[in-house]
Length: 421
Image 1 (tube, rainbow, N blue to C red):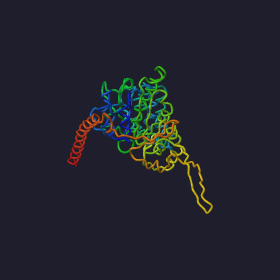
Image 2 (cartoon, rainbow, N blue to C red):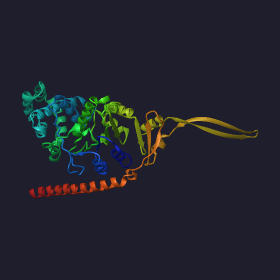
Image 3 (cartoon, rainbow, N blue to C red):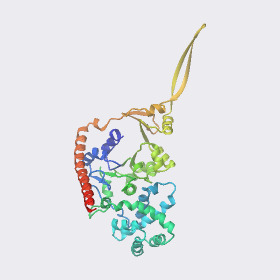
Image 4 (cartoon, rainbow, N blue to C red):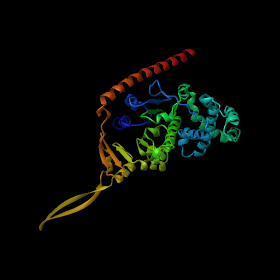
């Protein structure tokens, strides 16, 4: 999918672009080419890409506004395991409310990410945030936070479980550094939307140091800014359409806004491409009804061979419709011969034929048109393949140097720890 579709889509987009991934393959192949047409930034808190000039974004930025603090708290929790759980939504709501108030307190006090991490680690430490909110925060928010910290112990334990899990990555120095920008390092959302600029969001949604919730919050902020900008523009559309090329998003974080963006984003100039291994990924990351919304709202559906979900393949078979074939039969007997002609309806493509499509072919279902079999050329077959390949090699060389430094640093730390013991 990367070689034949995603990399081409990134290279060909004319306008601002955000793309997600759990790996750096797409970035390595496209970063230098995208830099020819606009600014390129990489948000990589887990240091997975080997890019030195990675962007730093504070989760606290803008949270002086209680509305932004509330939205960001919801987005961060939604990107965690608790937020994705279908059975613990009441605790997820309480956790997002607590986190919103901690974000607001960190912002209005100017204490930033360090204070947020400290408060999130222990509710007793968060009493400091209660005092901040009482003096500088939105009316009522101090009392709300105080009621949870000093209230029912079960409520406190369950709600802080979500807050602690969401903020735990900040205990890792490299991740906290990526979320602590220096003076003048803040990401300018409005400037990003007025050129063919690129933002790569890279990270994992599970395992040690998972940052899915923070990546989801960044994406949420940019899309909401784009929505407001569109409403203030002629025709209520962005002058330059924004592309969201969301590769592996279901493995990174559950972004609550995705079904809505799929349904109405096109009308304001936001073009969304969601890349999934299987539709069941969407059902797991969101819900069955939201997965149906994502699927139904996609005006273009591209399926590659190798799928094994029989129910989904059967849906594709039905979506393509039927064709008529004429069967002619001949019979012979002592009295002569006869010919029988029958018209029969058969699927345009059977589910087995769809499953066995070669890797160079994609099946496109677009709006109300007939299904189309596409010849998917890899990016190495592009007219500018030599230039893209040269840029890819240079990026990979830079990445190898950084990865080697990281590996050596890890060995040095391990050696120092051994000497200490």
